[in-house]
Image (cartoon, rainbow, N blue to C red; front, top):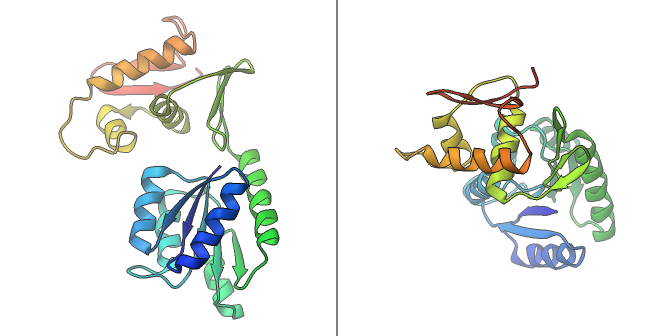
Length: 221
């Protein structure tokens, strides 16, 4: 799984990175609060380990900012701040857990496993015969796995998350491609066609429907 470590002390971040990679996790590192927000937005980590005292933007503000757009990704504070008031403040900011430094790495691993299990149970998206496991980035049709490119997966997930709502081309290009300037949205059609082909969706199956001149909608009706 992809884990973002937000920690400005190089010794701690390197220690965590080595241990987590030995457990077959992919590790991203941010050394300040602003970089953490950038990576969280662009890389969509499966879990975030967050220090409180950070340059440029505190961990508390990072947590609050992420939670405005992302309610599901587990965030675990790793911090020397240990008063009851600070613990409560951290949890109220949107964190899922609060681990005080110094900590046991084995305990941290167990807590990570718990949050991954919880996240996996909560994050299965369904659209008719299609299901997505968002933690493992797997797509299934009638319980048979279908292999997608990362961009195809992100686009399909985006549409299913907004099931029943029309997604405009401009919103898709901004939110999925992260392009915030004038751009040829025709590239979306290419990816939609590839997704439909892989899912064996034909014209009489309108799970992913084109709204001419506007965009697309995922709908089971």
